[in-house]
Amino acid sequence: MKAVILAGGLGTRLSEETTTRPKPMVEVGGKPILWHIMKIYSYHGINDFIICCGYKGYQIKEYFANYFLHMSDVTFDMRNNEMQVHQQRVEPWRVTLVDTGDHTMTGGRLLRVAAHLRDEEAFCMTYGDGVGDIDIAASIAFHRRHGKVATMTATYPPGRFGAVAIQASRVTQFKEKPKGDGGLINGGFFVLSPRVLDLLDNDQTVWEQAPLTQLAEQGDLMAFEHEGFWQPMDTLRDKQKLEELWEHGQAPWKIWE
Image (tube, rainbow, N blue to C red; front, side, top):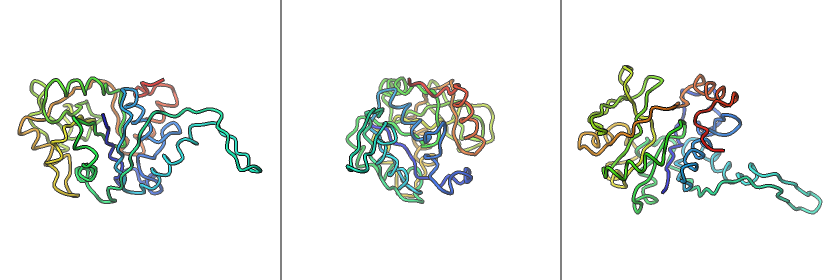
């Protein structure tokens, strides 16, 4: 199964970090948050990634172009123009990087990579700025059992996110960013049928608006409820919170060894 990661936004609310790099490349514990997200998926057996690049996307491409060196111990013999690799600590990842435009909306980015997804039974999708101890494998199993078009991880918010109404695991209503009332919200980890691609019109399609609303109204959006840790990195305060958890060995999303 493939995982699509939306990694092209401007990240304006985290401008202290994103003036020089895309938000998915902002580091937590010395590694880009994008790496943390990929490690979560990899733990659950998903190693084929499609990353939707946009703003400063060349930095993401350069990171993976040099990933082997980042993760290995190396000796450079300048005199003989040789490189010797002593240890390799790389994951079995296949990473497809697609330039989806600097100003493309979330649904538009997914539409731009549709050619990589139409032949899939299902695929995962998430944003390049949120982590959690999500049971990805269980969400996929849940998706296959219910047979609907889309599964959305529903979780409890730190606040300020779009709320969902749920009846018998079916999302009956989706509201974009109402005032916080303690209800479950869109946690950003999806399992989707390629049929969702038919709901995307163009670059300006916002996934969280018309497509999700339509799926909910037609009874095709199911909720996989997650009661554990979940945290997006929207602001500098969020970044500092994640950094502190990592530094103290208390990062709940670190489910890998």
